[in-house]
Length: 330
Image: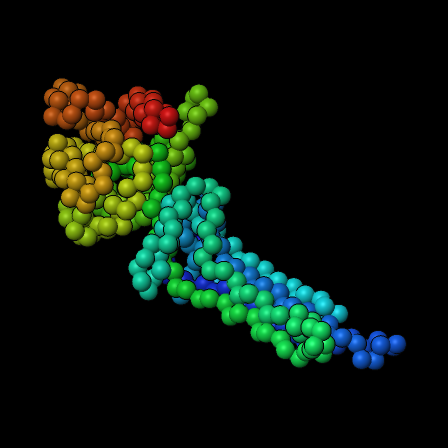
């Protein structure tokens, strides 16, 4: 895999055809006119989706690709049943929603590791002629064909699941902060929209605990109406236990104006009314010491000032964040 982040893909899946039944008769040395011995076919393979917590992207899927399970084999002589087709199990990351792409209906919303969903069931096996033998018809030539497999076009949409998601305007310092506190290595630059895709990192605390933090693409005004990365960003923000609003002193809007604009976008999109939050004033090294306290007073109580460049305030931020995550998990 080349490291691409893909959070939406359309694919075709097809279950296997059931194997046909067989017409056959026993032909043994002392029984030249033996009875029917045609066996049943094997069932076709089904297609399943399986949640794998090790995955965080849909990059294993190429849009438009057909994924198909095996067909069942034809029945054999001597009443032998044909081999069943192998099931196809496609692994997906937690938080994947499965839609029928033609109708738009939501088929499943899979969030738990190991959760399994039957997408299309394999075709039923055909019956061999031995099944049709009766006292009146001892040499039947009837048989049935296996049922065809079923095909469906799916749309897979990923909503990243993390303990904490960083929300902020482009160039607010989110990516740098994630690099400092976690194992994630998102691209960092001094220009907007550096982060075009979410990045997940694992934060390990000194107590042996760990939690997942997401660096979400920079939000811009109008995102709730689809402007910029719009809905794709907000979709990923929905499933974070806690939102960390990151505001910066060196953007066009003041930190308090940034916070108000971010909160307004989330409220317009909907679904965030009950989501807890934490506020971070980043790039504190750019703020003169005599102005830092007055700037913090423009933000809600509990806002934390930190500098990813110098490390000032990072330890306090992680301690507070870990405590909040622990509380939400319980």
